[in-house]
Structures are given as structure tokens and as C-alpha cells.
Length: 440
Image (cartoon, rainbow, N blue to C red):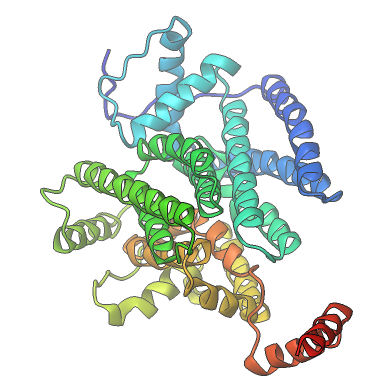
């Protein structure tokens, strides 16, 4: 039976049922956290990871209560829960009926929800717990990527910001696209890190399934990260050895091929006749218009979108700083405002790290990929003319932005020269000097 566009039935939840799911998730999380602590040789990391997992579960409870008491259970996840509950019956009998579902798109989330309910039983809060756990795994993959591809990264700072940022605890804690995209983008970023350090086979086997899965949810975001990866890969110096040059060519070729496929899927998803700058700009303007409507859920709409580069500073303010203090209209937005102020403080406090990332980006690789993704994300998602939507969507920007804030700090020429002079007087430096003098 095909699904209709009408409102799906509400799915309730049982404290006992949801509690069992939470205990199971924590039981799986403990060995993962311990393994990560051993892998990174950080004895305090497991405690942070488990605290973050518990806070993710708390975020799921908060999400359910806020929507129930302040929004009358009117939210996107209502559709996913209702359709997922209906699909779960067939999935248990190895039968999946997707007629009437939008795939790629929202229908994919309904299918994943159905799979979750087929395994855990139909329970809204229990389903939330599973989705927020998936987002936690995605954040763990981002952390691994930073440790692997950014030598000298402030890993402790990144771990604290990544695993404890309120937005990343709250918004992906429901049955929805954000949790699935955090998982997909996190795994894909780790795969990109493997490719950047020369582990081509492992990188492809890691990134490819994640990108394919994420493309079934939001192909346009997959196109953004693939484009960023290609720029970072092509801009890298291939090295002098033939093997390094071959690896560079293979990596760049795979990236370009993936970008072409992502562009084709995105064009089909957006209903575009061609992949051109004008067609993409028209699609973005259309998205902006659809989020500018009046009525329920659109009370936090803001201004229009411009494709002009001169409007980009305004886009940065829109994506990173909304809601502005005079636009706060709810408790959730007030919390977002406080988080914005924290992020501004972090940017000022760690500005040398941000400058270091920009300087490192000139050499290509992961730093350039992060910069390109952030720039493209701001340009595209500034078109979302609704503050509430922006608060959710930018959770897919924060892991990349926070990584830039945790890169090794930039050194001025004066500092670098002083450090080099100090290094000449260490024991190895003295020995090298003596040997050179003797050879002369």
C-alpha cells in the first residue's frame, strides 16, 4: 500500500522499552570508548566519550519532551516514525514496500526508521536513542579523521568541543536526516583522511559506502563534501617518487569520478535539467522562497538570498550567527544564541589556529578540504530562510569548522625564526654543525 502525503499517526513510547534500548546502546558504547582510548593513547578519552553518549541520550529525551509540550508533536519525525512503524511489519518478513516514498530524500529516513523499529520494536524514544547513537558514531569518525590527517591537531580541545557542543547533542537526537548525515559525513571524512595519508584502498572502502548511503538522504550535501575532497586532493603536491605520483593521480581521478556521479544524482534530486551555475542558483533561490512562507513554523523566517559574492559576508552572519539577539523568539533560539556567543569566543581565542588552517590549506589536503566545505556550505545553506532550519542544518558544518579551530596555530615569521635559532643549539643541531665543520 503506497504512503500518502497526509499526517502520519503518532507513535508513543514506553519508559521501560526505551530504557532497555538505552542500556543496550550504553553496553555497546563502553567497549567502543575503551578501544578508542587505547587506540589514541588517551586515558581520559573513554570517560569523555561515554559522558557524551549519555548526554546524547539525554538530548533525545529533551527533544521528545520539547516537541510534545511546546510543538504539539508536530515535527518532521512524526512522518518518519509513522511510516517507519508501518514499514517495520514488512521488514520483519523481509519485505520492503517503498511505493509513495521519496527516495532519495525523506523516504530514506522512513526506511531506516523502519529497520530500527524492526530490530528494537516500535517505540518513539527508543528510536530516538538509536538515531542519536548513530550521530555519536559519526562524531567519533570525525575525531579519528582529525587525528589521522592533521598532525599536531589540538585533539583534546577538538574532542571536548565536538562531543559536548549542545547543538550536536540536541538536534541529531531524533529520527531525522541530521543524525544519518552526521554518520555518513563522519565516515566519509575519515575515508578522505585515509586517502590523504596514502591508504588508498582503505580510504575508498570506507568513504564509498558512506557517500552512497548519505546520497540517499541528501545528495546535495554529498556533492559538497566530494567537491571539497577533490579540491584538496588536486591541490596537493604529488611528491617526487613515481609511486606517490601514481597514488595522487588515482586519488584525484576517483574524486573527480565521484563528483560527477554526485552532481548527476543531485541534479536529478533537485529536478534540474542541467548541472550549471545558473541552474544551481535558481534551485537555491527556489529553496529560499519555500522557507519564506507565512504560517505555522515560519515565524523565524529572515531575508532573501543573493548569488553575488558581495553578499557572502551576510551569508556568514546568517549561517553562523543567527539568531541575532533581537531575533530570539523561543527558548531553543535563546540557547542557540548562547552557543553562537561561545563560538565567537572560540574563534577569537583560537584565531591563530584558524590562521594556521588557512595557511596549511594553501598546500592542499585535509585543511583545504575543510575550508572549501565550510565556504560552500555557508554559500548554499544561507538560502534557508528560516532560523529554525538553520539551527538544525549547521550541525553538519560544526565538525568541520571546529576542526579548523583546533589545527596547529600559525606562527609569525619572527616566531618561526626564533624557534629555528633555538633549535640550532639543541644536541642534534650542535652535532650536525660539528660534523659539517669537520667535513669542511
